[in-house]
Length: 194
Image 1 (tube, helix red, strand yellow):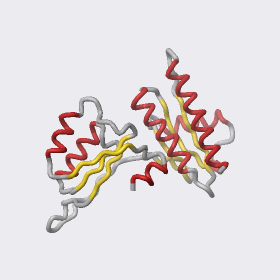
Image 2: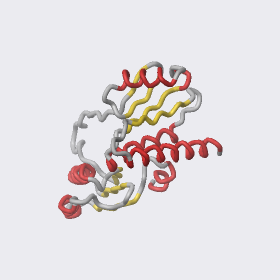
Image 3: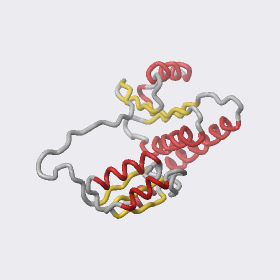
């Protein structure tokens, strides 16, 4: 549809900006902003730009931020929007503005289940970014906690350079370990994985 075409055009434009910044001797901070209607959320569009911004920060080491703003709540002038975002975001790299509030992604802990074997995991666990350093450590923990199968995904489908020792420790355990090439920011890839 036209929404998908618009999203692709936006993504290609963002890639062009990133490529220009990567070629620059002194790259500037870049903001990828997605304006969405409060009636129809642009999650897939935002996910594409968010995935791009994460990859660029990790792999190309460029200063790139990604924000989602509800159109009806965004200040009208572009300069006002930039000032607003700078003040509201601080050092955050990703955010979403909803109902006048700034939401940022955070990992949070959960209470350990109590009872007999409550902390044991079972079945299959998929880890996005699982072939990177942190992913391999997490996979070993998940396997040690009792997962019968661990599926490690990454955009490249390749083990991180220097991750061989962690891989060896993981595959020596009891859990069955599988790998898959998958960009979880792409809805089609994620659907194909499950």
